[in-house]
Length: 183
Ligand SMILES: [Zn+2]
Image (cartoon, rainbow, N blue to C red; front, side, top):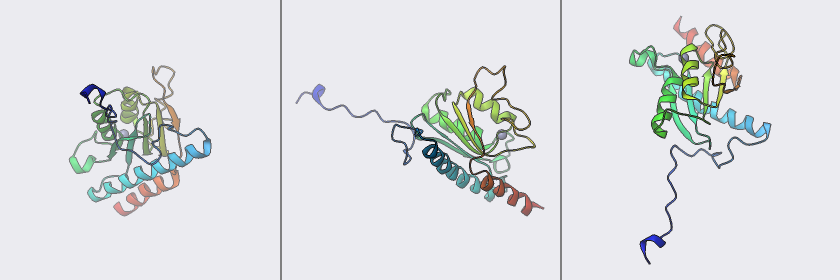
């Protein structure tokens, strides 16, 4: 059989398959979407818990592609590596861009356990992610609705969809417990 008749190898897709990454991401029904956001937030919460080992504020984030595949994961590592910009969202966005080989994360979803700060809200706008799913709101420093609203600012050229309050109680409790043990 000539080479050109060989069946084409399927193009390898970047990232890691998650159980719901079946090409219909996110699912159409409200209830099914809610289940997917809850499951993704569970992964972000797990990543956040690893920050406790380095006495970093436990915040976790991840990026999934337009098809629901996992592209990047990050947790707050500010203390661990002594970097003021090492927030969970920035590290997850960087890893996702490296996975895709492009800084454009159009159609991607950023999931994070705590409402992004001004730096991270700026980073998510610059990366052009299409959707933000956040856990606990941050009334002290949140920049996607609480203190500032950089993602729905009239002057913003890019306005991602924002889904807030996903597993908010668990996300907030993890941080409150952390600060309680720091005292
Ligand atoms: Zn931040």
